[in-house]
Image (tube, rainbow, N blue to C red; front, side, top):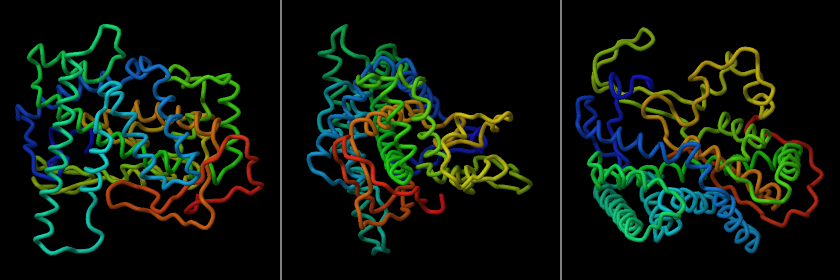
Amino acid sequence: MLKHTNTTYTIARDLLGEATDGSRASEDLALWMRARALAGRGLNRTGTRAAGDRLAAAVTRHADTWRARGRIEAIPALEDLTAHLIAEFCLGPETGAVPDLLARLQDALLPPALPLPARWHALRRHRLRRASRDLADEVSALMRRRRATRREDSPPAVADLLDTACEEGALTREGATSVIVANLFAAHETTAAALSWLLLLLDRHPHLRRRVRDEADRELAGRPPTAADVPRLPVAGAVVKETLRLYPPLWLVQRTVEEPTELAGFPLRRGQRVGVSPFVLHRDPHHYDRPAAFDPDRWIERPDTPLPKYAFMPFGGGPRNCLGTHFATTAMTIAAATLTRDYRISQSPGTATTFDTRTILQPHGLTLDVAGPRIIDRDVLDRSIFGT
């Protein structure tokens, strides 16, 4: 299903849930894939390494405000952090109102918790379109400003690659803006959700939090981590992968059938919807020993038999996989090392957390207490969360 997206299967809805032309012969689709490939080049290993310590600096800047407040609501605070991370990475240091507009679009996209009258759906659709248009206008204005003021020694950004493609006639300005908007929205929401689960799991497993902190102390010697340091932080990286295995933000990936086909012996006709759940797949005992356990060491002590290609897919797969996969895992590893070394983050006493799957998989109701790093860890036994 994922491998043959854009041929047998398609993505038939856009960011706002509106129908798109999913035809594999569509010129719009070809241009979109070209734009995605260019954006992917900016979000890859070379791009993240060029960012230096800017990612860690953004994490520290936000965490300092959390510590001053003492207590935060995890999802809004982490979405604000990741919105700034991905906005600065895509657009450069000047992000304007993009983080606030991302939050507004995210709020508008939340489906209603209760059934609403038909007239309210029309109002919601209008609100979505306006929020999306305002975000696209702001991104477009920032890209124009960056073109006019950027110096040769300016730190690179994803927007620069897309601008070059526009100048070469390979992409329209509207297409470049659309790709930036899509990446901003997808990367900030999923990364924030994954970081929320990571901080909660580390709080529930103090011995692992200490291992991440000790590794950061040993390998970084007090300086901020960069993307180049990620290979030297295997424990933090394993915690990130294990968090994404147990709680993949994209818990359900769907496609629309483009042409009659057969899947696992079942005939499918054009227009039908099919899906796969990474949440279920990642807990398959055929692929994972003790699949419900939070065990980052499974990624360090690699098994003799490698996992099948699609047995681990927290960000999807195939030609329409999430472009921000490398960016998200790198940012999460840097955040894990920075936050465990320099801060003490724990679930607020007396609060409860539940699943929220209305959009992506999130820990609903999670509040966190944030303090300095020298508070002694609570003397608690490892606890489990939702059976892990």
